[in-house]
Length: 338
Image 1 (tube, rainbow, N blue to C red):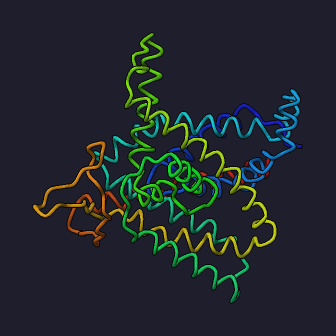
Image 2: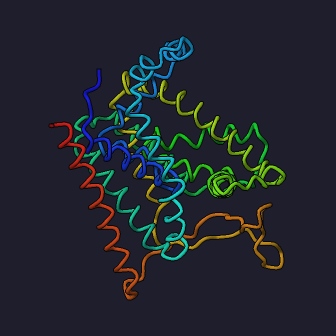
Image 3: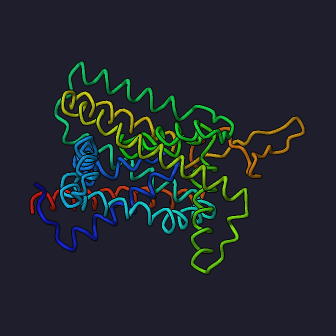
């Protein structure tokens, strides 16, 4: 049985959902890191594991209260509510700052990941030849992923479903960025920008009594893509949680070592000082995808110039990112003691 949550705990759970949803949308950042450092990762995985055959039997038999209690419904509903709100509020704000203050945004997330590595590693007292080997493997995989080149956009519905299953890994695997995986698969803009904006616009129009979108085939196609992506994400979330639940139970130390290595390797993805490399034609023009957006090939990373004022501000934002993780970790520990 789960202990009753106070009003403050419920508010903080929604805020955590906001943080997870925002982190999941940023390439290179994992929502799972938020869960891991804030101290609710295992409860998150455990609750998702409860969405199983027994849960569906309770649901189909009309035992809604039993279903809600069995799946830790209050925890999941508040967390998911926060994630959904983030896609229509915080994430749009984040898009604005990425466009106008990209260096500082990446610096903040870089600091948050450094803080994550420290707080996960400082309590891990099980380093030996085996865990060190797996940690190095995780590090190598994390670095390798950060240097892969993205594929072209693909709106095939079966592929979209697969994208949903893979991208949701960022929620369940700390250090693995679902958004960055979508960039590599070529569908980041389609699934986390165009489809979310289409849903937002549709809601706004319906509230105003405008149902013109029903005759807009492009909008309907985009919404269909979003539905399939959501189904894939839900399937992946439940499936991965069962796999991870087993792995955490039987190979906890090895799994933690891999996570530490992987998160460390992912620092290359969010390195603040980088330039976007676009796909160009023979004439030097930027190639566009079907939505008219420039196609990203990869990023060119460079060392910061200490003579620039922006560099020192970026360092301050890195410290801010570490501070955010200190606050999350402090809250997670104090809630556990309470």
